[in-house]
Image (cartoon, one colour):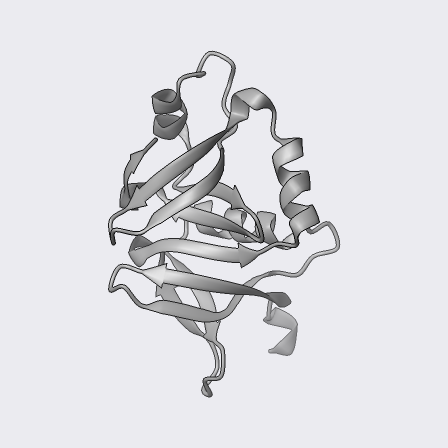
Length: 155
C-alpha cells in the first residue's frame, strides 16, 4: 500500500483558530518536482475546495491530525526579510496596498494586503469581495493567510 501514499512535505506554520488557540506545527503539502515556494503551497492548500487540512502539532506525539478550514482564522508562515521584500516587490501597485485588518478575535494585523484582480476591480471593496477564501498579508518576517469571513474591517 506504500505506493498509494501521496508524498508530502512539512511546512512550519502558526495557526490561530476560532477558539482563540494558537497552534504551532507543520502543515503538509504535496511534494512534487514543480512545487512553488512554501508560502504559495500553503495558500493553494487553504484556498482549494477541500474542507480540512493536515497538521502536526510541534512537540506532540501521535502524528498529524486534520483541522477544519472553517475554524481557521489565520495561518502564519515565517519569511526571511528578503523573501518578504521580494513578495511585496512582485506585487503590482494595483494588486497590493498597506492595510490594517481587525480580526474577529480583536487582534490587529498590519502589512501589505496582496490581492490579484483584474484592472476593472481597483477599489479595495471590489478586491476583497472577489478574493479567494484566504487573503495574503505580507509583513516583516511572515506572510499571514487570513480567512475573509474572520475579518471585521480593513483600513
